[in-house]
Image (tube, one colour):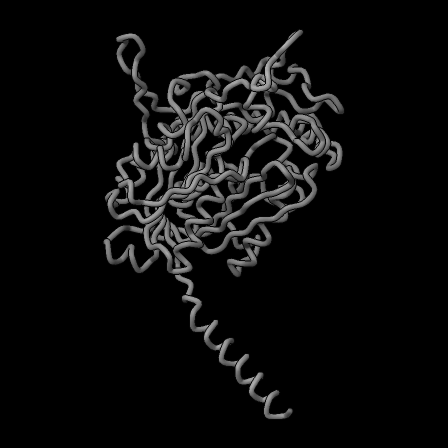
Length: 419
């Protein structure tokens, strides 16, 4: 009996040793290329392009900036939320349009607003596990091209009026658990955390002014790639070089805009993010591969994490994900120089800054989703691109990007600038 017990212990020990040896050593993941398209307004200058077409522009530019050939890419992870009528495998479409060989595996990621960031996290994980060495990751969205749905049309609309459902709202902006618009949850967040209409308006106005400064100072030109939009019916092509939305604000009317979601009526079209089109891409590599290819790292990923709570608390989920990501990075919030928080609504940033005790001067220093736009499948990657750019612009060391997503979730990532 004793010998049998000893044998079992030895067997377990051998299995444990084998397990340890079979797990590859984690490795530093570096960002060697970044690019994003301008963010187009709803039915604006980029609306004639599909999400994969926008994604291809960002991917191609990020590869070129990194000095990486499409043939060197081993896998693509790309976020996209509103996939109806886009066609099969949106990430594969964008990859092929960018010139990446058809032998490269592609995965489309859907984590609502955090899709683009989750794509980067999945790409980084694959490198840390030793599966890949060169990965393209990012996100794309054309909210302008989201179709309308005809429910029950397949079974036949036999008598009476039919119903048409807005696909962008149904699959991008609607909470299926409480059966109401995400803006209703933003109102609940404002009430719960005692954030007034005035605070939200002031935040949004600051966001617009900061975005304008980002463009006038030339900051955004370092991350944005111009997009050529073909003309229709023989008209000449146009080149879109800058974000559309930040120039469309009317400050004189801002504080008189009506609340649109009931309850406290503090959330308005002015202090919420705008429906938008755009794409962003980053090139990830193992640090060893970057050295081998003589690619210049811009930043190293130090940690990342997801978090989740009740769907009605999605606006403040970044306050849970960010500490987890910092713990994974071995850092504290006091170590961080700058934060990029996605501005789904102004109240999102106000609430998370309040919970995490963040200095407003360190948060979204060149605006965010309210003033720039929030193409939902793209934004998680967009704020990473902007954060990398910002750390170099300010010669700062550490940055955190965080984004909430419908269903109560959030993702966060910690990066360190490499000189």
